[in-house]
Length: 96
Image (cartoon, rainbow, N blue to C red; front, side):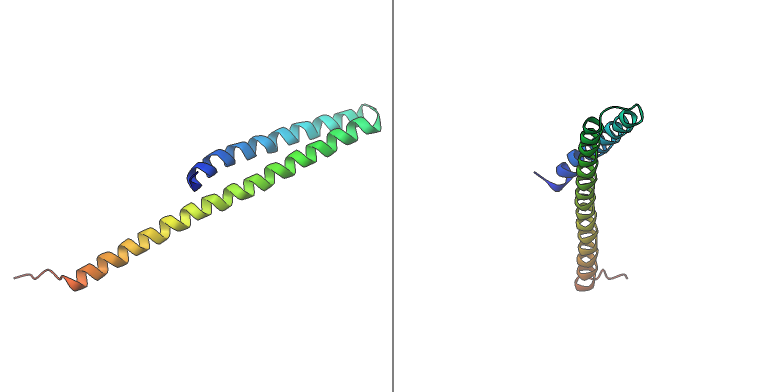
C-alpha cells in the first residue's frame, strides 16, 4: 500500500476515533454526575481514554505519512531542478 493511500485512510479514521472517544467520555462524565455506580462510569471513562489515545496515536502516524509525502515531493523537485541546470551547462544554446 502506498504512503499516500495509508495517509488517506488513516487521517479520517483517526479523527473519527478521537470524536467517538470524546463522545464516550462525555457520556461517562454524565453518568458520574447523575450518581451511577462507580464501576460503570469508571470503566466507560477508561474505555473512552483508550479510544482517544488510540485516535491521537493514529493521527500522529498519519502526520508522519504526510510529511514523508511532502519530503519526497520536495526532493524530487530539487533533483529535477539540479538535472535541468546540469543539462543547460553541458548543452548551452548558442545565440547568434
